[in-house]
Length: 343
Image (tube, rainbow, N blue to C red):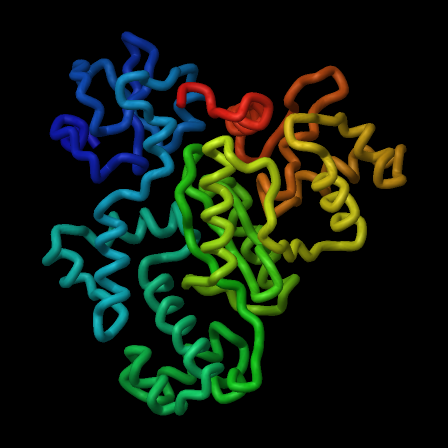
């Protein structure tokens, strides 16, 4: 990190942050400022910087940089997508100047899976779609980068829970991909019915929520592309630019009957307004179940679109938010004024 900061290496932007003790600010690694290294400390996320008492540098604007995927990650993903095998071995990563450890760490921290799992998911997600289109099983197996039909079948069953031949008759899977936002990377997920996941990638219970999605939908979770995720990305871009006040993309939240009742009520809170937990409890017909309502609120897996950030304490305090209070504050400010502070 010291070497990257000394070189002002922009490829590390979003990977870590540099805080300067003498000025009380934090920067991205490419910031042109030149503090003495003995006066700096490093953090893995914006949240950690803010909780440690640092404020964002106005010169390099790390709040905006956090949503930008590093160039080396984009190049790596494109290299995998265009390769014949759909994977890259350790020696191939080394040949292009990347260490397997660095790649594994980034994918694990930001996507909740290793690089190898991401590559395999890409291949299998494509295989799933080609099988549903009616292509021959043998052709799909070879095109998916597997050396044998049995290897492809075993991997397919591990991910999808059924032999590949059955996918010709349909079947559901949750497609996930990461998109950028001014408040940090977002992990999104969708089925053909609607968006079922929208989480900040640094949320502590992200892996738990992914497991819950698998359980609720009884489907595998695989990386890939989906029209609804493209739709979602476009609407979020308009939202963060202050040009969208509601969302049209269909949702598929899937929870318990009580959770879905709470989540439906959350969607009725007008943008720019807030309500307290006791009011939310009254609206769902459970005025004495404020704790249960708060728990259902916190178990929401579709941030922003199901606006749990619009629920505050009875005294007007922001209380908790899975994405961090700093994000809750910025989201409410965006919805109130039509612009993010500092942008």
